[in-house]
Image 1 (spheres, one colour):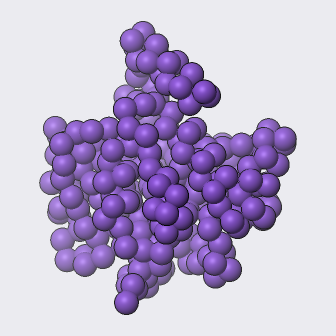
Image 2 (cartoon, rainbow, N blue to C red; image 1 turned 90 degrees about the horizontal axis):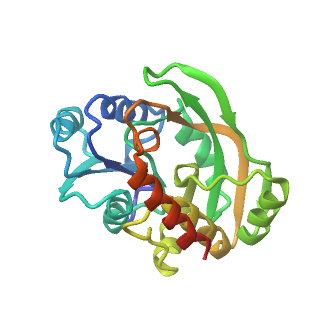
Amino acid sequence: MQSELISIIIPCYGVENYIEDCLQSIDSQNFPRNMFEVIIIDDGSTDNTYDVICGFIAGKSNFKVYRKENGGLSSTRNYGLARASGKYVWFVDSDDEINENSLTKILTHLENDVDVIHFGLEKISDKGSKLHEQYLPLVNSGSGKDVFFKQLHEKTTMTMSQLFIAKRKLLLDKELFFVEGIAHEDMLHTPKLLLAARLVITVSEVFYRYRIREGSIMTSLGPEQLLKKSNDLMFIYN
């Protein structure tokens, strides 16, 4: 019988300086260990990311690590989804963190058997200090279509996949996998997820801590990367 309520999927690449903080924020949750699993995928890192992961999760039975050839974020998320067993799935980036007691608070919202829960974030610095910048969605519930178009109307739309927890069955039944080989993959995946969801709730609580760091994909783009991202955006809009 399935015991895990939530599968937390963490794609990793070249994050030896951040992954332990990410894992510690999850490991320190006041939440029964048999109710969540953590699936960590090293996407072909060339630094010590894999060794740091292995050292941290030693003896933690609900933490699992996999290693694969580099394929990008979408590929790695799909890899983790294929190995998840929880009723719900949460994609967490390896240089970010989740807030204290987030899983316990999330549980109270999942008790209504929702398809998707959407929540807020706060930004943190490279060193982990709070930057006092937040995103808080409108408190709302209803079909995913209604929630999505209300957010569009109110100009409060946020497509970061890390801010959504979704039923694994919904993701699999509707084949809601991430398109591989493109940037801005969340801008395509999240609207498709919401439009497929029967019941979505949004809560104005911060469960996610989003790190702003030097050298990340979003802060180290050259002309060729910018051109590709622009072309990927046109693909998504189409």
